[in-house]
Length: 264
Image (cartoon, rainbow, N blue to C red; front, side, top):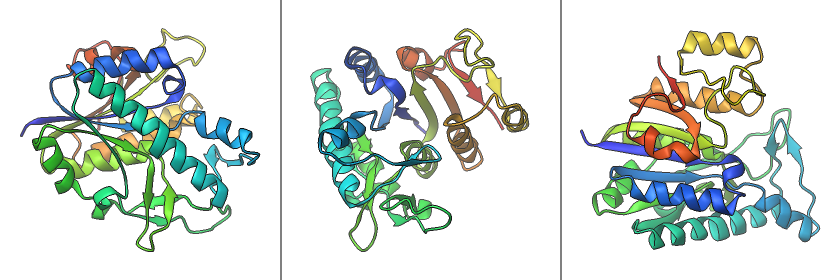
């Protein structure tokens, strides 16, 4: 099967115009079939402040009320998605900006209320992902750019986790391609010491990852990223890499020494 790269860009790269432009130019030059999933950065929080809408977080995740889902949709699915798509087009990449509800690529349900009511936040229905539609776009030489907004069967817009979108798409498309999932952000990989940029852990298996969690080396926002990565590996994805956005060409080519490689 042909290779496919599912690349998620997030962290501070989204908020840094120069870093984002450099990443997108590198991404555009990668010859393989590819999909780009992007996060939202701080734009939604900044716009919320300007509009007088309070930003509320719980366990690192945004509480998405009626006003917030409007802001999230405007920023993630509007400004950020179309800005990235236009920059890729200018770099010679035939990008097409999409959200989860377009072609019902990523169906979701509203997250049930347990201890916390997250509001209009979606949990993806992984078994219903429209991988065939995405494969048709890829075979027509389009590069999908996916924003982290989707909807449920009632037509309600939902804010969804971009890391999870990347994982679920990589899994679903492994039916058609040899799929590699790459998480790009502003660090060189999983660090043994968060204060030492050179302390990159080159390779991690599941057992080692659980040990790192116990020792709080994997903590906070890195926990769901690692959990998503191992879910992907256990469900058909060929490999998962976590690394710095500026090394995307090295990582995409399979060059060792760049990022953290996750293994079963």
